[in-house]
Length: 248
Image (cartoon, rainbow, N blue to C red):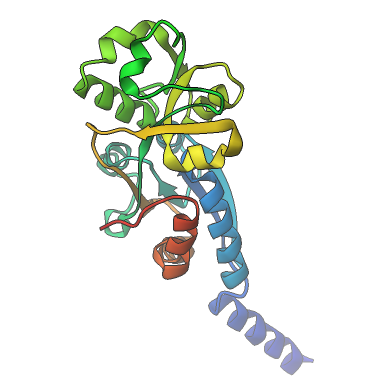
């Protein structure tokens, strides 16, 4: 009987050591990563057995959650500024920080729209322009920077309808509640036939996504494996399928 118990213990210990009794991860990621990270997480779980709980929101809101003590293992932001803030506040492990994808900020309209370009936003027929709140939504900051560079920001202020994240901005366009809006190319693609891409914007910082393991993660090794999977050929292929570009 003792030999059987010892053998069972050894087997259990071996399974734990090899990761068969896998950890569970919480990944907080920018809203624009919803489709791509859902697929990545499913394939990661299938390969490793590690369950992934996904939490999508605007990058700044995710940062605020971590500051307030929310348990997070991996953080993926839509901008460098938010990740820089997380690093300064010692919320991430700097050694694990990597850039993994690029995106484009695009001007969109409902599918029936006929807007010719950004210069037409000042026209009387454009009454509502959807934009992420610049103070908390990276896409909104990129849009403000692009419009400021073009000398249009102040003149368009009265037309802005602000969203809590880039997906809310997309929904305003899909429902026809705004005449134009600013989202990432990946969001516009996710919007399907309800959305028309007018043009990619310029005059702003590159839309570069960083990812990192959090400093207080209870599953450091599993979290690092998730980051590695995102950066693997398969992870990058999934991101490309959803409209992201590789980091050069």
